Image 1 (cartoon, one colour):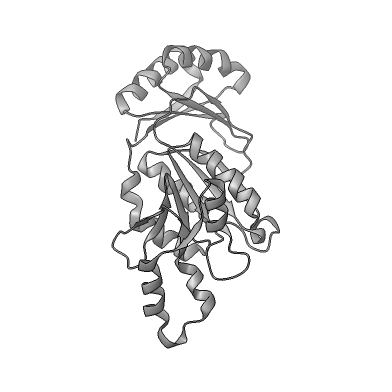
Image 2: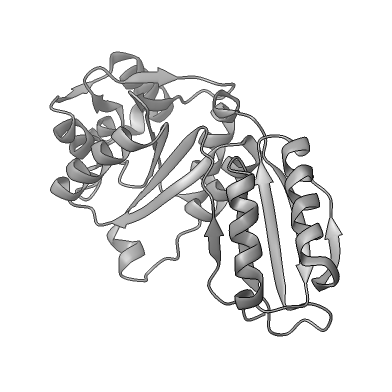
Length: 255
């Protein structure tokens, strides 16, 4: 279905997040990124507002510049990719450089690596035990921990591993769930805009999104209203519907 660009009104913010996808293979189109799309849905369900996604190459300087900048702006930062035993796995080193520290061998991780590979251990596999100095090993139920450095969570790029590791620690990120209502309108955005501006001014805790639709039969624009609690959303929906009157085709209460 074709969808026009959305216009957002208002910006209530609680816990926020940024995602840094690291990998030449993503930028070159060799592989499509799956991890950011997965994390978008997960963070939404946890009540964390995703504010930025950046895709950067396997480059020490890019990593060192981007990750600390995200860490300064957002509550949580998640990196995807560049964690492994090969030459292009430079995420740990890039993060260490960006925060002015060094990469060290974590004895706890090294023991796990040696136990896992046993006699088949290749010297390069020991790079999997390297972490930025001062990093934390975060355990859930899985054997392998997630490496965390301050508010940065360093995850592998392989989608199956990325999902497994995030899900193992996901509850530490739970915030206030977002309540979302939907209002379906028969008018175009230009007609709706003054009413939306008025509702935004009257309900600053509510974020309103406007999404034109061109292939629907019974409505022209889908409006979403969201906030931290259903009562706040309901109040804004009632105000909006009173202003729009017959332009409202139907509504969907906060969920």
